[in-house]
Amino acid sequence: MKITIVSVGKLKEKYLMQGIDEYLKRLNAYAKVSIIEVADEKAPENMSEAEMQEVKQKEGERILSHLSQDTYVITLEINGKMLSSEQLAKKMDELATYGKSKIAFVIGGSLGISDEVQKRSDLALSFSKMTFPHQLMRLVLLEQVYRGFRINRGEPYHK
Image (cartoon, rainbow, N blue to C red; front, side, top):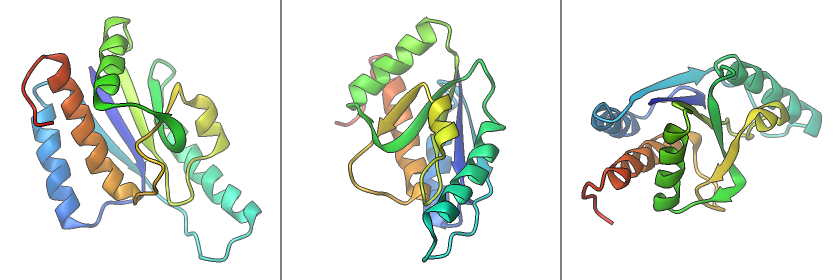
């Protein structure tokens, strides 16, 4: 299985990088995992709705340029479907079973994701109704993907 995380913005926090590196190392036993960072747009505090849409559109174009037609796309969205760890593991297993061996998880920028990226999405996934920094979501996502592989293989993992 090939898993790509397409994320808006550069990761700068050392502690997050260390956690991400740890989960990427652990995931090597299960899948080929890569992270693609796309540039974020400058988003000043007081933007009009039109300016916000333009920022999301530009970031969305960058995201879409990394998604091939044969990739199953899962967008992380606050209004997406909430799954348990076991349900996400089952979904990943079903995708692998039915020949969808290329999965991309998309983490948008601070304003969310564009309508075009939402249309390309095969599954909108929510981790919570709360808002999290998109850099932190990379770490949380990698941990859940790792947990999913452990669940699917019947390997022990803390609950």
